[in-house]
Amino acid sequence: MWAYLNLTLKARRLTVANQISQRRSMAFEAEIQRIQQIKADLLRTQGQRVLAVAFDLSALIKLRIQTRGENSQKQSLPYYTPFTVKSRKAKGYQVGYVDYTQTGQLWASVGPRLISEGGGKVSAVIESRNERGKGILDKAVPKRGNLLLASDEELKIAQDAYTESITRILNI
Image 1 (cartoon, rainbow, N blue to C red):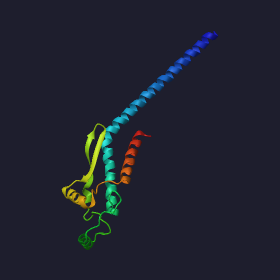
Image 2 (cartoon, helix red, strand yellow):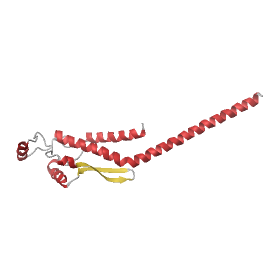
Image 3 (spheres, rainbow, N blue to C red):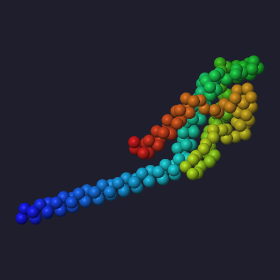
Image 4 (cartoon, helix red, strand yellow):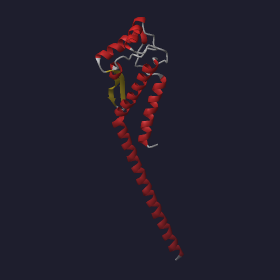
């Protein structure tokens, strides 16, 4: 009788062990499906996340130029000509540094645009969305460089924001 009881207990232990193994396997399969869904969601929304980060980066660039008059290397932009200083003073604009701000139309026209998307890669560009703004920015290049280049600090902020957006999605 003892041998029979012992075999019954062993059989029950095996049954319980198999059930636990099956539950683990089912949980593992569910986790794989969850990860696959997250991956699909990440790929589907990648363009939106890149565009959101590019908008933030655009705002940082505008802020730097409009409040400090600095290029992407944190150097002051070459100063206004004496004629421009006189003209800006007469109109009540600040002349302490070059800010490319008078009517606000230039900076209102500057923002990001997706230029390519696919294969898990997304590219965006920050540019003026109208011809007047493009002309002002093009004219600035010989004297002051590309005004829309981001500084290393701004790029790090943008990269951190992108990483944070993915971390939130992954629930890490």
